[in-house]
Image (cartoon, rainbow, N blue to C red; front, side):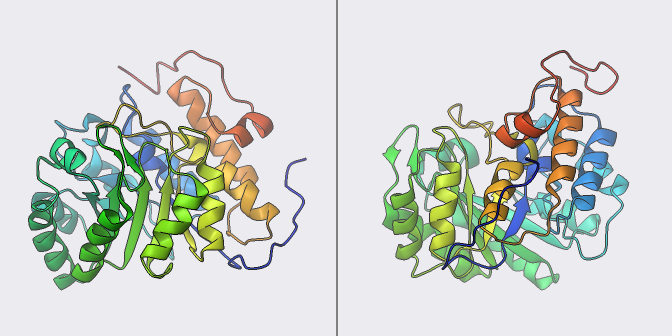
Length: 317
């Protein structure tokens, strides 16, 4: 079988937007430097597969994420397709300055739901992190940009344990009140379960302006996604091939694989606009350049993924 048998489940959205994070969140944790030409082709292939939103890179300082040091060069190489959004992540006002210099139309900012991760990832306290975001969001909106917000550690923190639901809601609502059009709830270390997902979305008062971002550390990403869909969420973050992690949380493994998500959605009769065969082909192509097999179960089932070895002409240490 190359496609799942579709059986429509009542109460699910008719269509889901897959917010593709592979080029940024997927590649940022790779130790080997991926050539910018490979990254540009990756983005091009994703658009050809039907993606309409592709988070392309980040204007973070190269000291912190060396893999994304080529952000400006990459944006210059990507041939933008009409109707496709190419957001970038920005950590601060300097990152926003660079985004504006390169004609970016949509950005994302990232916050923490916990004190320890805010200090480790942002060098701020849980409360003072907003002092960094407020001018970024305000200036971005003044310049006509759309602003998305991520919140990390929404379900659990490796240093603090389970994250209180009310604490997540407080952080998220502050970001929405700043003017962010969408809030992505991140299970950074993959400890969430479906009941927890349902409770958190309910605590926000419903799914309006919410997206979900699951890591598959404990094998719960698809189950958690289905819970979010049943609660009314229609935007799901995913990474083609299931690549990625978080450089500031060792227990954070790969993102939910786009192919695994699409197989489930198409099996539920939910439209995505994505071509599964093209996604599998892209992941197989990328795996060859990363020198390791794709962690996506669908790619493993449908594609020919390399078992090891590094293509020296594509990836260098």
